[in-house]
Structure formats: C-alpha cells, structure tokens
Amino acid sequence: MSATEDLKTDHRAIERMLAVLEAAAQRLESGQRVRPGLFRDAVDFVRNFADRCHHGKEEENLFPRMEAAGVPRVGGPLGVMLLEHDRGREYVAAIAGAIDGYEGGDGSAVGIIAENARGYAALLRQHIAKEDNVLFPMADRVLSPDDQRELEQRFEEIETKVMGPGVHERYHRLLDDLERELGLASG
Ligand SMILES: [Fe+2]
Ligand SMILES: [Fe+2]
Image 1 (cartoon, rainbow, N blue to C red):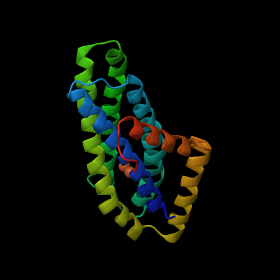
Image 2: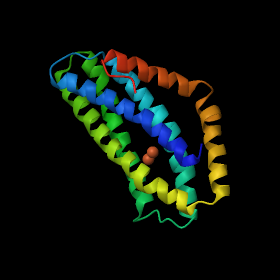
Image 3: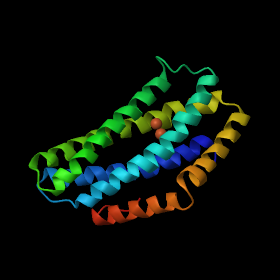
Image 4: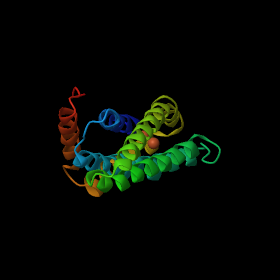
C-alpha cells in the first residue's frame, strides 16, 4: 500500500467515528441520553487513532517531505492542514472537558458536547476531502519513489512501535461496538 493509500485507509476509519459523533450529537439534541462513556471512548479514539497516529504520520512525515519537495508551508496547503489539525484539537478538548459535567447532570454540558461534536465532524469531513482530493494527489506528484518507500516504512513503524501491536485492531473493534450501540450500519 502506498503512503497516501495508507492515509486514505485511516480516513475511512476516522469518518466512521465522525458518523458516531454526529449520531450521538443528534440524540443529545433530541433530548435523549447518551452513555457518557461513549464520548470518553470517542475522545480516546480521536486523540490516539486520529491525532497521535494519523496526524503524526502527516505532520511529522508526509508534510515535511512535501515541504522539502517544494510545497510551501506558509500560505500554502500544508499550513492550512496544520491549522485545521489544531482547530480539531480544540473541539476535542471542549468535548473532553464537558464529559464529567454531563455525567453529573450539568445541563449546559449537553449543548457543549453536541455543538463541539458537530463542529469537529464538519471540520474533519471537509479536511479529509481536501487531503484525499487535492493534497495527496499533489504528494504523489512531487514525492520521489524513495520518499514514498521511506514514508511507507515510517508509517509501519508508527503503527507497531509508537502505537503498539494490536492497537489499530482494538480501535476498529471499538468502531464496530459504538456503531452497534447507536444503531449505525457497520461500514
Ligand atoms: Fe490531516
Ligand atoms: Fe488526514
């Protein structure tokens, strides 16, 4: 699998979690209760699978190589992608910070979680579309075969050494479980 195909595969898993967050927000908005642990699980997934692993592949590996190959960071697509990663972290921090209050019956926490879950999902959906349709085709044009090979190796290392063996599989099982819990079709 090429480096950009690997990243696109991550995107498909992340989109499944975005659908979970949107479905959970929908329930909150219609006055239904959602298990607080579901949001804890979603935050854990987003922080580790999406941010640490996937955004690590992009920020520490793909983007610097694209920059070295002549794609500008400041005022260019890489700068926009980095800003959006940061904006995503803010939404997730807001969700994480409201879960205890939600669990304890604080009424204002419901709106904070729903709003930030919606905001995060909308941000990431358009971010992923830009990467899949614009940034990754650009990477495939500017990166050398050596760059591509080294990226594939590095991604493999991130999966096994940084994340740990079996961690990806565990997060895929979590997606299955949360989709089942919310009555979503498994993707
Ligand atoms: Fe990204
Ligand atoms: Fe991405």
